[in-house]
Image (cartoon, rainbow, N blue to C red; front, side):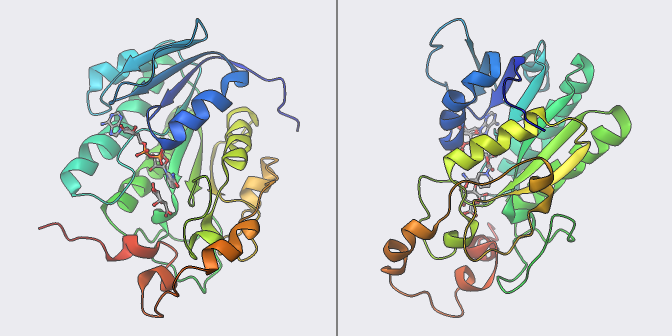
Length: 270
Ligand code: NAI
Ligand code: 15L
């Protein structure tokens, strides 16, 4: 179905001071009367009455409760976005996602778009082709936290009817930075279009999709995203010559073996 012209009254965007948060703060503007932008690090000041800025630590249950009050939908980007010691991941990503869903339950917020990650399935090899129903194979503390987030989303749908689309984002940057990202890259335009579909497609229950553009060589069957009406417009192909001018990657480098690349070899931290 067409989701154009649909609008949320008040949309909460967490992680708004981060890389993708800054992008989506601008690009989601047409899809909400008011966007409440939030982060632990102070986001830029509100640009007008269509924005509300709230500094909030996702690990703080009471603060998250107040943050979610009055919001009709949430795009949840906030949290630690790289591999880190468990204690850091625990606060931002494990407690954080739980606080968010609890607040959504208390305040009757019925739609969440959760920024999950390819690191939920990072230990699959780049020679394997999987869809979103494949068993999870997290590649570290960070991947484990995103796997937990997806399970929280499923539970809050089954128990309370809160709908979520979990996007296992590949690599969303202005351009692919290395050979691995030729497969995992998601352009900002495709990210925005996908988030729009995740916000407005009816009856998504808990759906898991991959966040990738129409790249040439892919590891993921993204038919679940296609069912939401997502049609990627971009591809990593225009960047191939630039990326392949980089020094070759050794055959035993995790970046050449695993879908999760270097994340599979980080840690332990003590
Ligand atoms: P980022 O690290 O630039 O942004 C994350 C934001 O979360 C930061 O501004 C940070 O201050 C905030 N944050 C961290 N701990 C917090 C806490 N306790 N309370 C409140 N805010 C906190 O990451 P990026 O690239 O913008 O990613 C956004 C989301 O998408 C993250 O959840 C990340 O895990 C996910 N993702 C991103 C990918 C990418 O390629 N950019 C790939 C896969 C997943
Ligand atoms: C992620 O989950 C990270 O948040 C991002 O910074 C990239 O490292 C990305 O995965 C990736 O796998 O390229």
